[in-house]
Image (cartoon, rainbow, N blue to C red; front, side, top):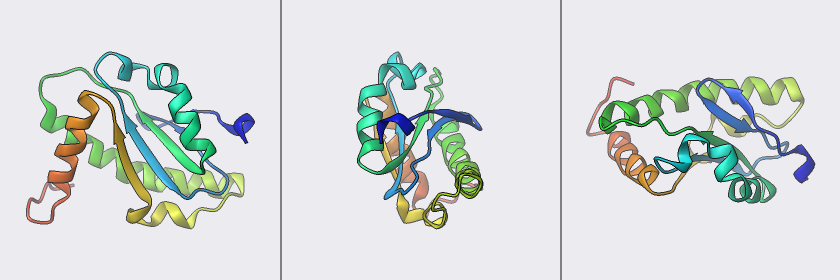
Length: 131
């Protein structure tokens, strides 16, 4: 299966589309290593792929304004949901899973974990973001 592990650029992310995905893992790395996630976290991301997940690696954008970045990550997730469905259709892969919000998981390292905490807060229905 590892020979089909290949990242392609989609929107502002890098994506490795699994032919029969169990779900989608969206990875946000730390401030240094996260700027090139497909290089620095390659082994870890490949293991996720080999376990049956489509992998989205979001390059870290350095800033001290974390709220706008978190809101941008939510918007990116909506773009990816549409794009992953299109890519899966084009490749003849299973695509229904990409329309299910419960199929998406966040994984982070270092400052990427802070973004995940902000995303969880923003995802709560009590705090509308306009996304």
